[in-house]
Amino acid sequence: MGRTTLIKSVAQSTHLYSMATLKFPKGLCDKMDFLVRKFWWNPHKNGNRLYTPVAWADLCKPLANESLGFRSFERFNEIMVAKLAWWILSNRDSFCVTVLQAKYSVGNNWLHATPTKSASFTWRGIERDKFLLTRALIIDQVWKLRNSMVHKGGRMKMEVMISSLRCREIEHRLSKVQSSLPSPSVLVQKWSVPAEGWVKINVDAALGDSHSSLAMVVRDWRGTGVLAISRKTKTSIPLQVEAETLLWAAQVADEQGLAQVCFESDSKICIDALHGNLTDSSWRIQSSLS
Image 1 (cartoon, one colour):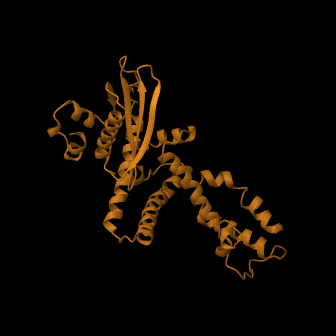
Image 2 (image 1 turned 60 degrees about the horizontal axis):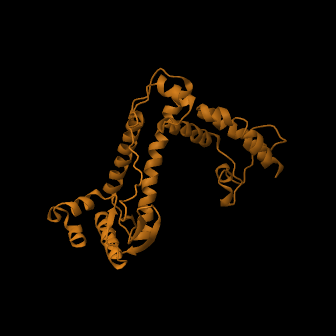
Image 3 (image 1 turned 90 degrees about the horizontal axis):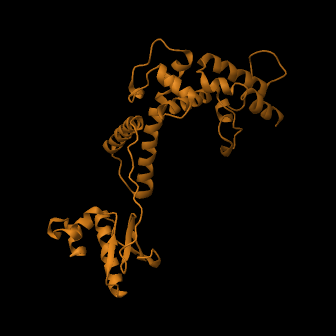
């Protein structure tokens, strides 16, 4: 195991910083792989002829696959440069990334933009490896489609996968546009006590795949907690869940004999329906709020 340790800690680690910033030529990576292979199989003899009972690609597999976990210099170099490309794509807070983005005018469509002809050696390597990110998105969608078929009995629909890829791309572009816009001012609203002699019931709901959770908190005009309970419901439609939460809160208030009650919810549609004409609201909440 001595040679294994030397290869991992010296031969394949010395160039770590350079491989993380520069795209090495394929010929150089192949030569470095050959030197490591020679040290592993035949370190005491001269010449280029080696007896290799196991393929080098098999020795570069992970330890979990009962291999030695060596690295292919070319593949490792691609991964490290692709990581730098991802930093640029995701606007990482780094001085290096900021300089590269400003120098080469990185825009929202950088993944599909034509590579810059006059660029540094570092940037040319990043331009070549940025396509790994596109391939990674495709592999991610293929893997999710495979999981859907195997575990959920779904059917393969290429149009769904292509549409999902386009949505991912649009989502990324919009995120970059939004991140470049100034942050809007946020109005923070604090909870306020009700009028003297009244109680306030705050309600909310959390949606799930097959059911939802309803919750309410009752506090008096001093701000003292009176009641806090929750329960589940089989409804998973957002607007209907909010309406059922208000209905449940009204029923609890009636059971507790609360006469002067103020209801507070984050569903503006439901609250407007209670204050206005219920017939103009969605049919999903009319039965609950009538």
